[in-house]
Image (cartoon, rainbow, N blue to C red; front, side):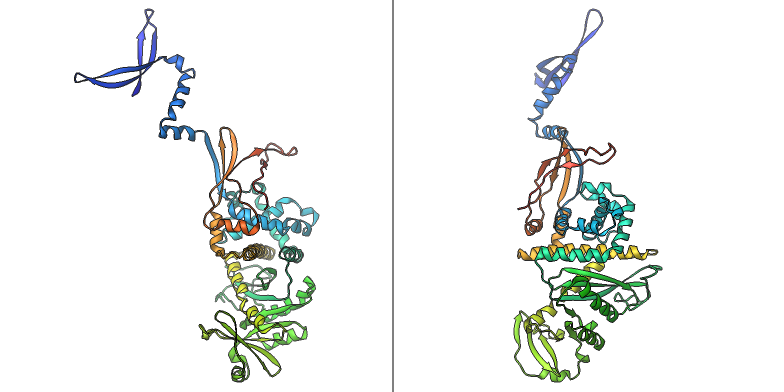
Length: 493
């Protein structure tokens, strides 16, 4: 079937055209058109009847119905949403907005600066290896508040982070203790270095021992202090020629004063141990657990052959306590990887099992440094100011705090999902803004993989699959400023 028009000439010479539905039929070996329906004069049906008829008929054709329905939809954008939902919730639980605003002077308490810091932190978590500027990356994330940010907000925010680092860390430590009901009785400390291309910052950029094996490059030293549960407390930035021993002494002096801690047990790896460090700890009455290099322990043979039974602490870890020459040693033995046997020297009063597990948990710091170095993304850097470098490292520290907080929440729920893959699954959750029949809606894509585990760990529900967006402009806003959306997507459970 198809349509055709039939035109007739009136006596006055004018023409009238009719529209017909016909079909081709074969009669007596010839094909002719058979009129199935006369629809009337074409100018009459064009007034609206024809459109209604086509729309009505379209539903009986799957292809045409889909095309007709699709014309009602207007998709505006599809942006990343999953990581923003999860880490903004943690950001708010730690009251980071108020911490930042209270730490900055009144002249710089604008919401844009706190929002710029959050954007940079989220970028470190979401896209740390990207060479794109954060001010371009935020266009790919669904958060209406990001639309108010300009490039100068990011630069000013970095300077303020560097200026108010200690106050921010102090207040954040209080919030972290409250959120996790955390008692800090054991602290992990480790350092790393990262190098620059070119001149580097004037104060921090120095040649020194490079843990990246790039002694030909200017570098900076970074130290991070963490709890035994893997929650970062503070960090320090040092010139690139600073030795680990010097950084350790500085942290010892500063630690108790800043955070008002009654008992601190420092745990360090074998690369940090020296007689000077141990003497410094003893003089300050600070308990410690430090790994010892076998070749540097006097009378190592006597220590190893000292009697005593090994106790099983966990799979592939056996320990025994040895007292020798007024020092306490915890000898650790891994029956599967005996070549990695360790001895730990300790002056603390922890149970033998706790000592072994505490030292074994030093991997949390080492993994944290692998992550923070990958997220620093400082290279290539040619002419950065010292304050910008310090501010950038502070951004990385805050990202590490949020990621550690998520890990802790997952652990509390006994979730065994791999962190890296969880982040990837969350990145698959998109926000889609669209218009249907003149009304604006916000939709989300399906939860991929283990993404739901993150919402479950935080005790929040995923957003509704579709919700209506109501445009409500604040009275003081000019018509050139962005819209604010009045939308409740999910309550806490």
